[in-house]
Image (cartoon, rainbow, N blue to C red; front, side, top):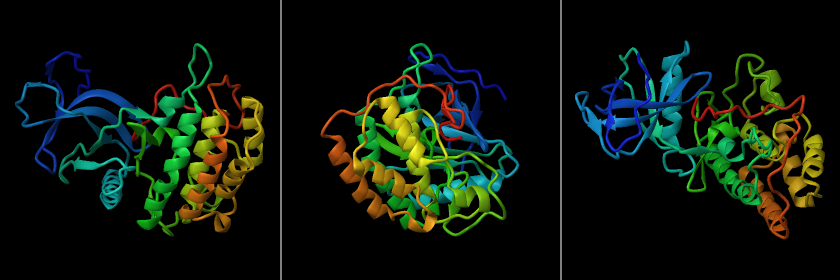
Length: 311
């Protein structure tokens, strides 16, 4: 299958198409956006039919082409979770999927032009990242709402990270539900992904708790402010204060420590929102965060050159 990018002109000549889909739509591939454990994601455009040769100003979509050995179960899982959270504007909208008998299976969702990883990525020339106090406040305001929706729907996303959080008109939108589970639907053994942004109960025991995503959400905040992840929230706090040459408000420290406490001690989303509002109130008294030059941490996981988007 050819995946040659289409030229950026008023009319785009169409080369590679997939479909028809479950909705009877064909999609043409524009460009690769990212790749991950479960597949490759492309920017694509919907077509009226397979014979359409040109398109003009049609809104793009994100098309995930599955490549792993568990295609059918993964696609079904993602589609189900997206449909259950359809009323939340902080989750990308489900649009379409391939037909069950289609040999190349794909999922189509709302296209998000930027991710949190894109926004805060370290510039290779200046070695400064794009962090600002504004984006920190936006994250603190919106992430409790995301946690609340997931909790209400009894969903554990399990892969919250900057690459899987989109930004559209400054609204956070999560995607990539490929690893998601129902709350309490544990893995059969230790989690296959040892990264320190996963909570200990998931990493070492494969347990899916109602606060797994709360832990991951705090690790996202850490990574925004220190450029990576650590196993110790106390160390992360020290690094934030050292890198930014600040003293964090007590409410901000309390929020970070609460979100990464033991599984049974982590706050529910409503309590996370209260703690976050207190942290925001104190943050807004002064401008604490601005772009910084980072030194790589030996135990940190850093952002790739291009975000995985949905993959």
